[in-house]
Image (cartoon, rainbow, N blue to C red; front, side, top):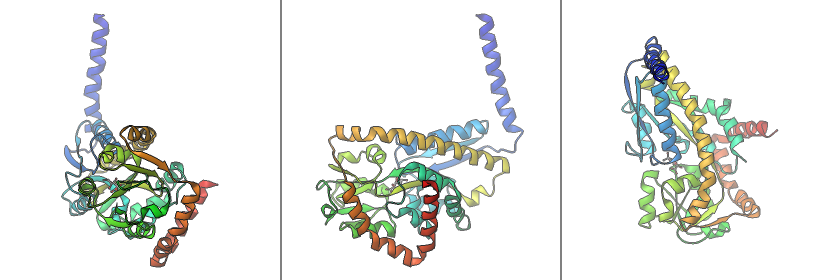
Length: 337
Ligand code: TF8
């Protein structure tokens, strides 16, 4: 017993001594890294940030200290992007949809009904297409590290069940600040209201908007069921998140530090996707239990929506996005085969 204890003590001690030694052989400085995000600490986004914090600490012998800031406490997605560009904040995770003011090409991911499932999305985001778009951020002062899953988006509102597109008529629907979303939902007959996520709950609570669209995990973690009665499973868009670093800050790091960040980011991506997918399986039952009335759109209705959204797709193509959309569809077809 005594022996066992001292062996345990010794191995524990050895690990404690060796970890920092291994890290200090590398060029790593003690740093505080502010990592902002829009959802709550208990959301899938929050859990993955926590995982990243721990990975960074482990991989750097405690030197690279990441502090997560939940609930948009450092600002909305767009405000944080600008803080990263200016070098006032180091890292964030947020929607690619809000990056369109910086790199227009990201709008291609906002087009509806592109991906049939998560596996197609993973292959495209982690493959050359996703990497090419992320690389376009560099000249704008951002580094796109990895894509996380936000998920397939669904509709909620406080007015009525949406069983057919016509039910959206006149509904004031919050969308992300992005022209594709505005065109898409106006095309469906709703009144699209672009708003930052951080203003959304209050806007629904006060009736400034009647509804919104987001993955079920977010509808759960942001407690939208408190202010929304109807949930329609439409899966109209697969939405990614992107983990970003300030380029100004990132360029000043050592190779060893950058390597740790890149590897921790990849580990966080794998953790986040698995965790989000598991969580989303529980969400529908949870939301039903919270009193939401839930319906699924029929294939026929989804087919009608695809037709109705064609003008928005054509507009994207005519606006210089045709080649990009073709390329993306080509990449998705490769995965489908
Ligand atoms: C949205 C997005 C949100 C993100 C998040 C705050 O509706 O789906 O998940 O912006 O980072 O705005």
